[in-house]
Image (cartoon, rainbow, N blue to C red; front, side):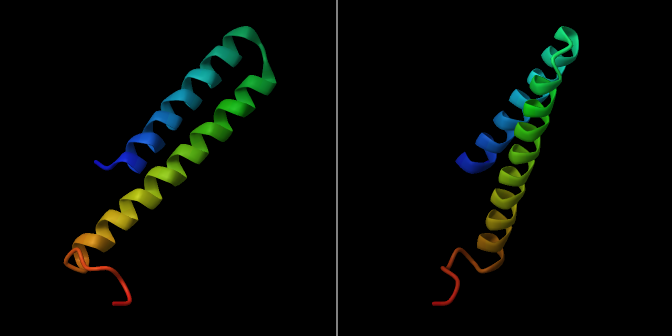
Length: 65
């Protein structure tokens, strides 16, 4: 697991916690902010996963070279 993927997973966890706290407190803005962080984390982790797959597929060579 690389740094970008770990950061994405951390954002997902942060977003889930924000959503839970927002629901408990009745704060709709916090719930929405948590959902946005979770989606951003999923995207970041997905991109990191795709880049890692691309690197292993190309034999760790840079693309276009």
